[in-house]
Image (cartoon, rainbow, N blue to C red; front, top):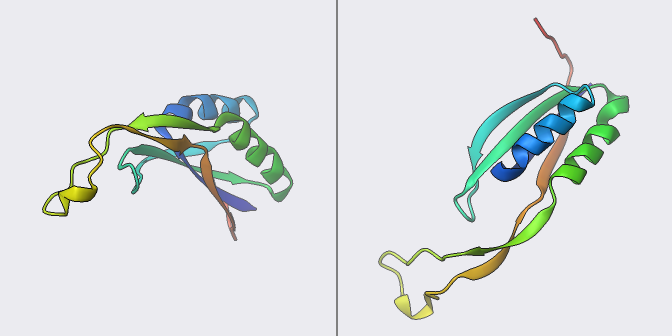
Length: 109
């Protein structure tokens, strides 16, 4: 058995959840917050058999693509304002950070 932890951007979560359910995966969805952009993320916990891990990873990859987004920078508080850029910058967002962990037991009650 494996536990898949997938941290994805909020805007991909509904699409991913639907795809997982369509392929008979059960998932627990948790709200989380990213550090870099301080924006909302969703963490999925998926318990599955070893032989279905590749299928789950394929579904995650197909539904959580990275993309470019304009982000307004936050002004520095008490820092050096000389390096502050007051206009939006383009950054890559989305995609997925995935951890696959071995588990000893997987129970559903």
